Image (tube, one colour):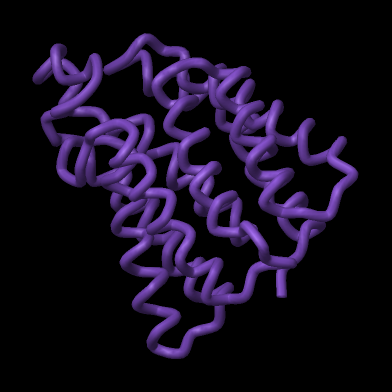
Length: 205
């Protein structure tokens, strides 16, 4: 069972990975957005890590709910709101639990994706984070069902997320500022999808 210290360790890994890639995310977002993705996500996950580091309770659900609120406050952008919604979905799934079993963890990418679709209204194929997150969820679930360990299932999921993110290059966006830029933005991969790949790789680092 994965308990609160394990959750805090994962949060720290993700925050460090985003900090390391913030300039790349900003440069990429500048091709099809307003260029603030790196800075906003660094701020969001710095706030999430601060919340985790200072939380002295034992309830994972409470920790994640507080983290979701910190994320939204630190990054009141579209992606910040989406990340907050995803974290909140995981928090709700943890309610009443002392920790996460393997099956709970396997379900998280799907829960996160469903929360983002409900909040933002996008769908796979719109050239958003979902074009990396949904394939990742498919891969993790399939690999785990085939008998792979949790780590190996998420390792395969990270590979899928990264490849799927790169595959968004050439797609026409159907959401956000990139939609209005049309062909000017089409040649570049989606920043949100790349963000998903970065987070997915951090989970297995």
